[in-house]
Image 1 (tube, rainbow, N blue to C red):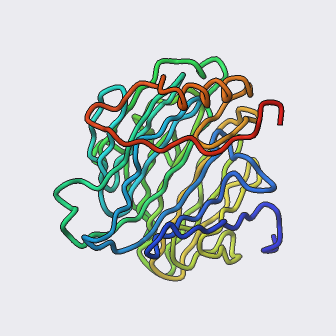
Image 2: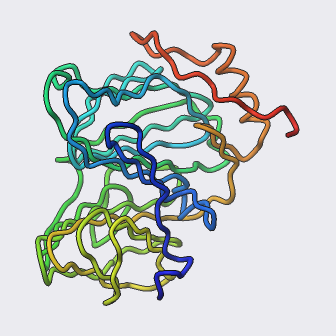
Length: 296
C-alpha cells in the first residue's frame, strides 16, 4: 500500500492560535466516514500558559454523538441537560445530541492560573436515523472502568465496543469500536484483533509500522475488511483504532448532522432565534456562521 493510496488519509491542519494545532482527518475529500465516525479531530499536544484561553463557548449540536478522549490535560464540560463533568485523561465522554443539545468545554478553574498541557481526540459519531430526534444525553465512563491489558510491549484499552477479548461498558446506538494502543518501545507489536465492518488506525505519535510498512505520524489508515494486520513500533508510540457499522451518508453543516437537510435548516433557525435550551450558568455563546440562502 503506497502512501498515495486513498486508504491513507492525511490531516488538514488548523492553528487556533498560540501554536494550538488541530488536525482534522474526517470528513475528508475522499471519504466522509469510517463506520459511524464522521468527524475526527486530533488537538495538541501543547503547553498552555495562564495567558492562553482555549475555552469553547456554548454551541449547539443535533443528530450526532460527540466522543471526547484526553491523553493529557483536563476540561470542564457543561451542557443543557444540566450535566457538569470534569473530563480527564483516560475517560470516555459520550454526548448524544439527539434533537438538540448545547454544551461548553472550558479550562477548569483550578488550572487557569497554571502552565498546563492539552492533548486529545474529539470525534463525532453519526447515530441511526431512527435516533436522530432522541432526547439528548451524556455518559461519562471513568478511566478505571474501561478494560485494559498489556501484551507484547503494548498496553491496550478498549474505549468503546469490543476487541482483543475485552468489552467496554460505554453504551452506543449502533456497533462501534474505539481502541487505544500505547507502545512501550522498539519491537512492541500487536495483531489488531478487532472485528468491525469498517476500521481505521490513526498514528497519534511515534514511529509505527502497519504490516511492516511505515505508518506516518498523524495518518489515518483505513483497513481492508476481514484482515488482522499487525501494528508495531520502532520506539515509544501511540495509536487508536476506530470503526463499526457504516450508517450511510449524512449532511454536515457546522455542528449539525442529519439525514435530511430540513433538520439542519430548522436547527440553524432555532440557534439564531435562541430556541435551543440554555447551559445553566453560561451567558456566552458562539454565533451561527453565515449560511447560504435556502436552496443554495
